[in-house]
Image 1 (cartoon, helix red, strand yellow):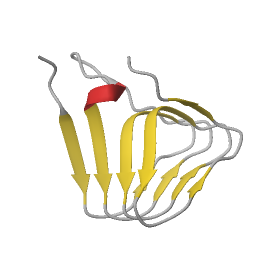
Image 2 (cartoon, helix red, strand yellow; image 1 turned 90 degrees about the vertical axis):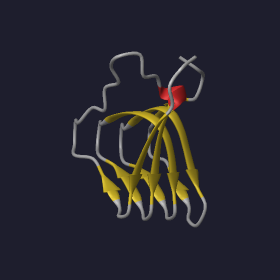
Image 3 (cartoon, one colour; image 1 turned 120 degrees about the vertical axis):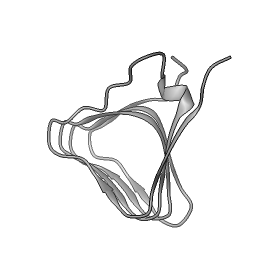
Image 4 (tube, helix red, strand yellow; image 1 turned 60 degrees about the horizontal axis):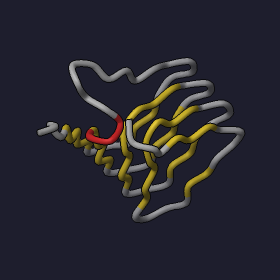
Length: 89
């Protein structure tokens, strides 16, 4: 049985330019969730793995790649030349 990982942030989430979220020890984009109580900004050319559930807008800046899903309950989702792969690992 796969483990589920839930990371709760009571703030916004911003990644730096060219940063990477890498999953290890059996974690996959399908079983890692980021619950964010604010806006999310994925930096230019950053790579992010997991499902984002945000209470605010989600912006993928130029070239950012998402392996997972981006879900917002209270804001827009903005894409700008991005690659999003939501298929299970």
